[in-house]
Amino acid sequence: QVQLVESGGGLVQPGGSLRLSCAASGIIFSAYDMNWYRQAPGKQREFVAVITSGGSTNYADSVKGRFTISRDNSENTVDLQMNSLKPEDTAVYYCNADLRPTPFKYWGQGTQVTVSS
Picture 1 (cartoon, rainbow, N blue to C red):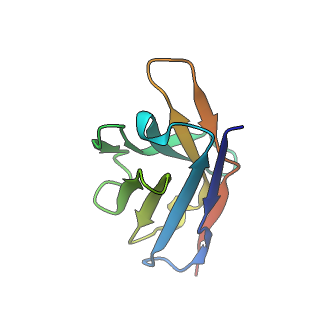
Picture 2 (tube, rainbow, N blue to C red):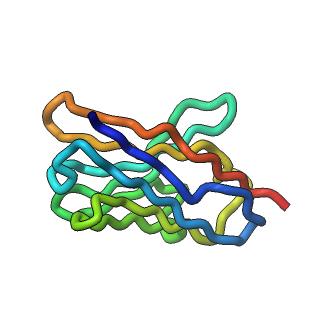
């Protein structure tokens, strides 16, 4: 049974930082590209960041220079360090495991991030 469990969300003031973590089980973690997506109220889910099975990273333009994605294949975890947070970063953040080019994709349940003074 595949499980992706996010943690680390919460309420933070503008300019603050949060670190999200996603713990995976039931998959060969090192083979998967790991993504973070987010969904704000009334908006579609959007891509935030990816770290491939080979360790390459890519970011949405809106978070470049502020967010950093990392993975630990020995612990089956992927983290998202979020700095200089803005109110527009407020969303539910989802962890995604993607075994490209196969159809195997899995999602976590999401963790709420709220940036507000």
